[in-house]
Length: 142
Image (tube, rainbow, N blue to C red):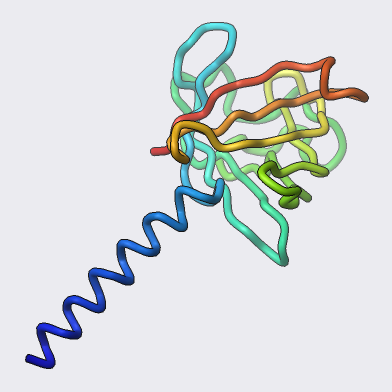
C-alpha cells in the first residue's frame, strides 16, 4: 500500500511539474525563422539568479559555425553553445528587460517574451528603442 501511495504521490508531483513548466519559458525551443518559416536552431532557456538566459544548443543547416558578425567577446566564437539571451526577468505575464543576440547580424536587441497556446509557443520580440519597432518570432516548445 505504501508503495502505491508513493507511486501516486510521484505521479501527482510529475503532473504538477509538467504544468509548472508550461507557465515558464524554461526549456528547449525550436527557433522558427519569421522570414523563411524553417527551423533554424534549438535554444535552451534556463533560469539563473532570477533571470532567464538562453543558448544555442543545436543548429539546423548553419550558414556559419562561428559568429563572424558578432562584436566584442563573441566575435568569431562558436555559435553552438553561445549564450544569446540574458538578463530577462518576469514582468507580470511577460518576461523582458533583457537582451537577445541575433547571430546572423551580430546585433543585440532588447527582448520581450510571452507564452501562448498553453505554454507550447513562445512569442519572442526583439526591438531597439520601442517595442513597436521590432520583429516577433514564434518559437515552439520541443
